[in-house]
Each structure stands twice: as structure tokens, then as C-alpha cells.
Image 1 (cartoon, rainbow, N blue to C red):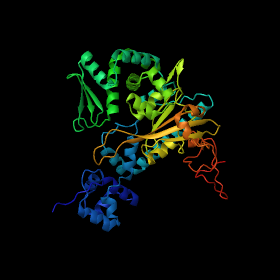
Image 2: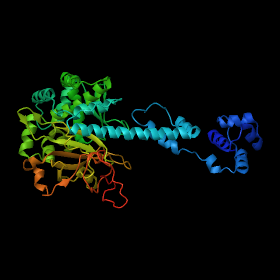
Image 3: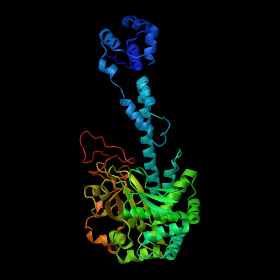
Image 4: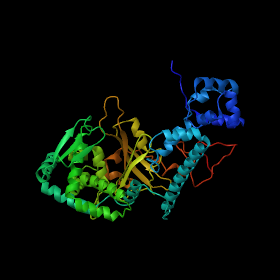
Length: 470
């Protein structure tokens, strides 16, 4: 029967040094040479079953400690090196396991340092947001990811691009799509550029939504996508061809610092252009006003999804022909904010969007249902919010679907102009910008203490909130 071999050199070294022994002394006790013990400690020789038994008998060592893979730290190190700032630095897990095994104290120090970095980054972000609410700008030094730079630029400005809107309306008028815009776009791609649109099954394109093959002049779309998302991908490809110059002008105007950020921004603006192409500005604004901004009704009128119709509402800010200033936010079931946009910029300072009491989080318990709510901020500002879940690409059998929730909001002053205002209760829900920035006392939903107030820590009295503060 083959003897089991275990490489556990760092653990043997820790046992020896913990007992204060020299290699020569331990080697004599184990009936091996000091050079062989040295090779064992450097993981160049295995620990055989006989050596394991001798270690257990001579030094009363727990065999599970030697045989088990002490990878608790390794798991936390994997999480650290999955951070966008470090991803790709280590090609595999073996080096992390070796670090956790050979230098557990150093690994613990790295873990604590990373936790402190994340905590300080969160505090800096919160403080910068607090300063912005007071009208001051805080520049936080340090590396920024290209995606974060693009989002910062887009969230801070109105979600309206005049050049793209004008070009989309002009092209739509030339196209004359009638009731079949999908057919008209496909026919234009084929006649003007020789590009054919083809659907591919999941097994042929398992990880992609779309792929353009320059050699065969074909645009491949995944069958995972709904018909609405397939239409948007076709419109995006058309926009990249028709509005090349307009997209370049808008990307230049954002003043991005890296080529990767410019590439991301170009894609984001191409998605914007696809919505402008499918829902021309003047026609969409007119329909929105007649339907009192009924998102489902607008989706049916223009043959688009709920998410696409809601996103288009945030772009209606043409000078002299503006609609209600809507904003939106998309979150997943874990509370991550995936996307933000606003007709006048996302109202980070006034609304925040980080309150756990928002109905966008409740929406996951009622998939597909529209939830409306009147909310009130600590300073008295009120908002009308509309939340609903949206489904991602079709999932295979046994695969968990991607479900997110979309919050669409506007100032409460517009409640009578919006169809959803009829369903509002008279008592608004008291919310805050985010727990770290909110000073509401006794909030049962509070998840973190505010950075602006010291904790209470009174042994004689405990408040309703998990985090009491003075």
C-alpha cells in the first residue's frame, strides 16, 4: 500500500521553534539527520506516516494540526487579492497557501492591514460625501479604477447628451421603421454595411451577450437575452456605426485620464445612444406626459423593457423641452449599488440612496411588483420612489437567475403629474442618505454608526438602535 506523503514544513518549523529546539536536537529525537529535517522544513521532503507518529509520540503533537490544511488565512488572502487593485498579481492560489502556511503571523498582519484600508477608504468616501452636501469639494488622493472615474463623471452631470439625441432623431427619421424597428435596423445593417444578425445558442456563446465578427460580417447575439435586450444590442451596434463622431465628442468632453476609461465611457454612451434611437426624444417625452410617466405603459408603447423605459426617463432634459427630472438606481439582493443615473445628475447629496429602508430592497420579496412610496429626508426634502425587480439574461435549468431591483425617483412635488402618485400614503417614510451620514435617533434599520457623532456607550441605558450615539 502506498505511503501517504504530507508536505508540512512550515508547521514542523513552528513546532520546533515553539519548543525552543535546535534542528540537531529534534532530528536526534526523530531518528533522522539534521539535513533531512532541514529539507522537511523547507518542504523539499515529505512527512511520512512514521514521522507523523514519532512527532505525536515525542512532542505530543496533534496529528490533525499536521495533516489538516490550515487554510483559514488562505481563504481571507484570496479575498484580499480578488480586490480590483490587486487582482492578477498572483496567478494562482498556491502562493497564497504557502504564505498562510509559512508565515501565518505575516498573513494575519496583511489581513488586518487590508481591513483597515477598506475601513479608511469607506470613511474617506463618507466624509467626502458629507463635505459635498455642505458645498465643499474633497479630492481624495490615490489610485482610481477606470470604471470608477467614468461613473464619477457620469453621476455628477445631467444624463443628457444633446449631440447624440439630435443624431439619433435624425437617423430614426431617415430609417422610417414603422412598427418594426428591429427589422428596420437589421435591414439597414445588411444593406449599408453587409452585417447580418444571428442568434446563437448558449453553448456556442456561453459567456457573451453579443459578438461582432469582422471577418464574416456577422453580429452574434446570445439566446439568453430577452427580445428587448436583443433589440438594444442591435441598436447599440447601429449607434456605434452611425454616431461615431458624436460619441467621440462626448467622450472627449468627459475629460477622462486613461484609454481604458475612454473605452468604458464610449460603451456607456453607446448604450445611451441605443435608447435614444429606440425611443426618439420628442416622441418619448410626448408619450410620457400623456401617460403620466407610466413606465410599463411607455415600455409597451415603444416595444422596450421596463428597465429601458425607466432609464430613458432620466434623459429628458433637453433645454426648452424638459420632462420631470427623474433619477434611478439599480441594486442587487446584497445591497450593492450597480448603477446610478439622474436627469440632473444623481442626487447623491440630497437623496444618497444608501438607506436600508428604501423600498428598492423590499422589492426582492415581491418580484415583478411595482412598489411606490413617499420618502422624507432628515432635512425635510421629499421624494417619490418607484421600485421593481428586473430579470437578467435567461438562466439554464438549475442555474440561479440574475435578479436586480430598480429604483426610479423624483421630487415629491411632482406627485400629481405622475401616475404613481395616486398610490402614495399620506405618511412618508423617514429615510436618510446612508447610515454613516444619517443622524436619525432610534432607527431600527441602522446598520452602521454615523461618522459625524460619537457612540453613546452608556451602560445604564440602551437605545433601540444597534448603534447608539450621542
